Amino acid sequence: MDHDPTTTNPDLYKLIFENERIRVLEYKDKPGDKTTPHRHPDSVMYTLSSFKRRVAAGTRQVDVELQAGQVRWVGAQEHSGENIGDTDTHTIFVELKEPLASGSPTPDSPLGPSTT
Image 1 (cartoon, rainbow, N blue to C red):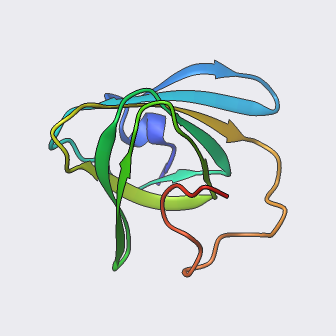
Image 2: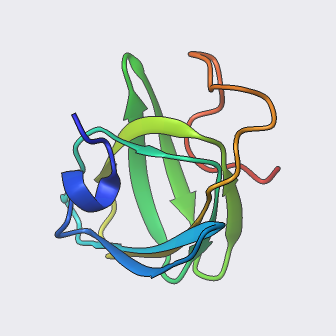
Image 3: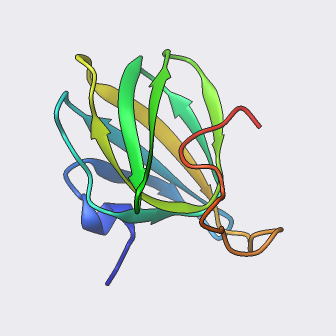
């Protein structure tokens, strides 16, 4: 199965730039929208809107609330997401194509965005 978010959720993820080192995706959704499971490599996320989301992987889930204009690191992970707020989500992901420095993510790797 292809876990590329532009394939699993093409109505929500749009490829806006790509070269041999990075890929840039735009993500937009509305309250109540959900994504199917998909993968992200190590990425930087820039929030263009304020939003509240639930990110889930297996039996784990985390609720994330971010304000517009924030930048977050998103370690490589597979997850699904849901807009649980009352505003649209609009973000930009800059995905790195370089191999992971620390190997594959583990079941206890951080889920969702982080400040480090």
